[in-house]
Structure formats: structure tokens, C-alpha cells
Image (cartoon, rainbow, N blue to C red; front, side, top):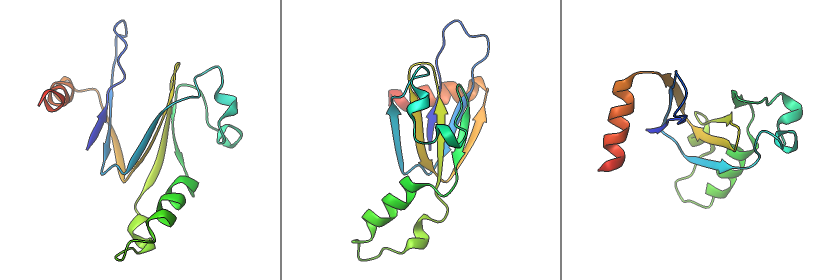
Amino acid sequence: MVTFWPWQPDAEKRCAVIFERPTAHCLGPPNDEALHGHPFYEGGLDLYRWAEVLNSPWIQQICERNRVHMRHTDTMFDSHRQFIGTFQDSTLEVIAQRYSFSDSADIQEKTLKEIRV
């Protein structure tokens, strides 16, 4: 499980995005001013939102790279999903099986404890 907790000190509300069984992630460009350069922008990727990529080329690429493994089967990746969160300064892309949102302070404290260990 990976928890992403967007931190904005002056925000009244915060939430955690919890990714279960993550396989890969990428945090970086584009920011909000360059989002129109993202390959999924024309398909509906929007500012300050979470989206799911259907028929993800990234998952297909990971599957293809893994084919050299002696126990590989393409069905290993059937439950993988690609999620994208867009923010002011960056974009977060995650391959995981599931996600959930939580605004619970308990989740935040648990996450911080796990990071400190």
C-alpha cells in the first residue's frame, strides 16, 4: 500500500489517496501550465483532478518488458490500472490495482508512523 497525501499547509481540507498493490509510479512534469503537452490531454485529462487511463500503454509496456521472465503470463497484469493526478507543480501517475480516498486523521498519522520507521 502506498499513501499519497497532498500537503497544502493553508488548506482547510486534505485527503489521502491510498494506492493498493502499486507496481510503478512517476511524479514530475507536466505542471498545470504545460498539461496540454501530456499525451492524454486530448483524451480528457484535466487540471487538478484524478483520472484513470483505460487500455493503458504504460501497463502494456510493463507487461512486454516482463515477458522475458520465465513465469510471466500476460494475465498477471489484468488487474493493473493506471491513475493520474494533476497538480499545480507536477503530475502523479501510478500503476496499482485499486485506490481509495480518505480524509481521516487516523490515516495521516498511520502513514506518518510508517514513513518514520
